[in-house]
Length: 468
Image (cartoon, rainbow, N blue to C red):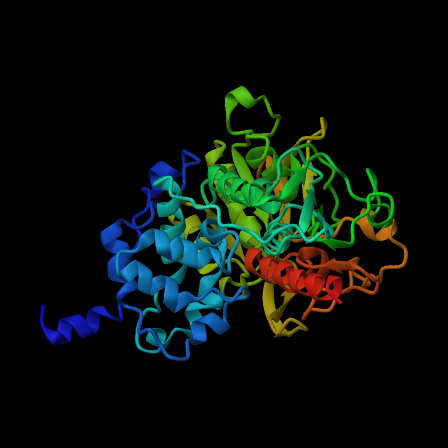
């Protein structure tokens, strides 16, 4: 290969092989296959190994990106996985679902002239290689220091906080309301994007480090935050309970049979395996499904509806594609699979028959006006533009808010007007002494990696406060 070809190759990312779009629309198997060893090494060798790596600054958990990539380039795959785990408790998860294109990869110098290094793909490869080769090492943790910390919620924020603390000798118990730990990782993200065996493996690693997980524990009901601090003898509490309360549109017909919140729809499929006939989990497998929304949850819902047997799965979103908050990769995959996009339109009514079953959704056309508080152009209704989309399932995926149970049973903790717990973004401290919070319970629905970053910051604060 000539020097010029080698130079040009540096600016082109190694593609990841994927399932055929037609075939994958009929199954719940993971879409990308992952890198082979040769592909991973080729991609890793593109890294410039910058002396001041901007990519690390873009990572909410400060993964030492050039260091683990250099190990992959040298063929030291297991060492790369262990380097990742020094700063990231869930590398196999992050490699699959984190928006690297908006965080670490967007800062890659190579991206100025071509494709940035595929940090997420390489992270996934290293974590998968270690697991698949049965080479997961359980490092020694510091001796018990006698301090106990309760972590409420086993999603990405809680698991990260727990992982940081247990390594430093703290006794950590994670309290999970559901029967399976993992939070949004198990109930919210579909199998075809994040196989549950991956999540179980990451959680098993934390348990082997010494984290205790107590399932079927509803914080605020089974025990309050105050009871954990007093009667249960915990020295600190971290609240990472997420934002699991679905939002609805408050339009006529939303109570019809066949209307789901995305939360319920995805939970039935992901956690309760509604796609498996033997699971006997009830869910309407409609022939024409409409998902309302434009985020990753909307993409997950529409693609799940397709896999559950819909002849046509459609997205209805009130803005244009440019304003869609979903990752570009998820929009791309949805389009490949035949999801129909109805953009610049918004539902105004869900129509049902005499028995109460959904038969259609009435929408209006929109046009973009002036920017709103989010910086995106505000959608404005076009008068007289009503039209009807026949359907038998409607999935509302327009966001979630925190469940009020914990704030309502912890009266001395400050809460915002949106129902989120007020915590310092830099350190996770709340208005209540020895109580910390992070993730979606603080920010509202956001990304896995931002929740992990919040869990890590809170763990640091807990350690500082408990060693004073």
